[in-house]
Length: 170
Image (cartoon, rainbow, N blue to C red; front, top):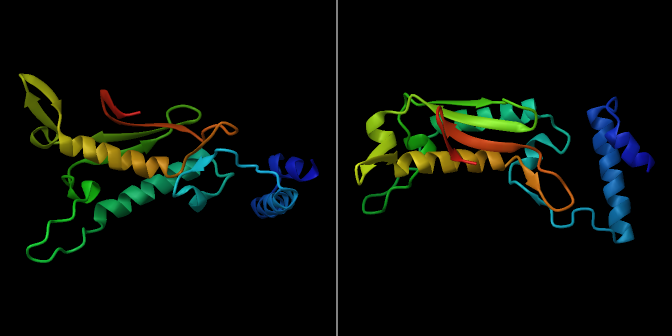
């Protein structure tokens, strides 16, 4: 109980909180108690830690997107299929922003999408192109890498990827 109180107290420093969390996990492991239940953590969750606030998470998402935009896809050899990179292959004029519109919510907005790249006409109806949907899915994967979920823990945040007037991934 004392370790949990120390971990949850708002005035506990980050290093002290991390130490108390490790001590608690060791004690619970020795006792055979499973604190994680059916929890799932994204593959990037460890980069910011358990107790990071949403502005820190949003900043890490921004950094991952910026890095993905400037990285080049691996060179393919002659005769081999090209490696697809939805983030790197997106047109350069596209602007991607990460915002915190509400408490517990992260929005990634894709703006300035070229009409001929982002939409297709199917049966006289304008629809989102497969490239734009693939980009949105890639951005959602980056964002959800920082999230967690489970029956005994709440999500860290709710996120969506959108274009200005339409949500692509919820």
